[in-house]
Image 1 (cartoon, rainbow, N blue to C red):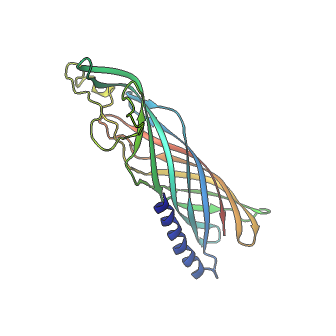
Image 2: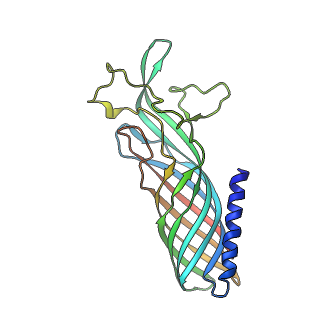
Length: 255
């Protein structure tokens, strides 16, 4: 965590130096931003369903470069901690006691990841109305997990380890053994989740709106809301499609 914070601080100093160069025209505005997030998975295949909403948090810095009075390109550098759940209607695991494959229904996988996110948006804002300026923004928010994604599982599927640590789900392929031909054939393969591996890269579409309340001079408080729609399939399993969606409440300060 210390390395991640140090990286964000370094980026802040670089942007601050650039802001000093542009201070006469005030083209570049810098600030700090934080967000509470609520993420869930939407699925497009019959073997999966969303497992509910999970909360997360993010923080970082941002810069708005105004190429016209009320039009800016906004770039952020964020560190986020977020999770999501997937419910598999049915999977097979190998039961050592009976020496056979056993079917488990409604098994929940609870994913957790830490990521760097770099939202890049076009921001359009109004003229000042009282002490407020209102804005809308649209763009993309690529995110990159900097460590293996962790997950804990329904105990009916995998018993937790003795030290109660989470499983690194991207360490190996086909964690769920389902290859018994007497149980699964091509005709019903779509009904089963074969592995828990997920992508470490996300590319959501970001849409947001909010307001800037001028406190004094160039200092303003920012509040807003955002919605991220996942454009990429997160699941690596064959015939499994699920996308991550996030709703954010955003607050920050601009200088």
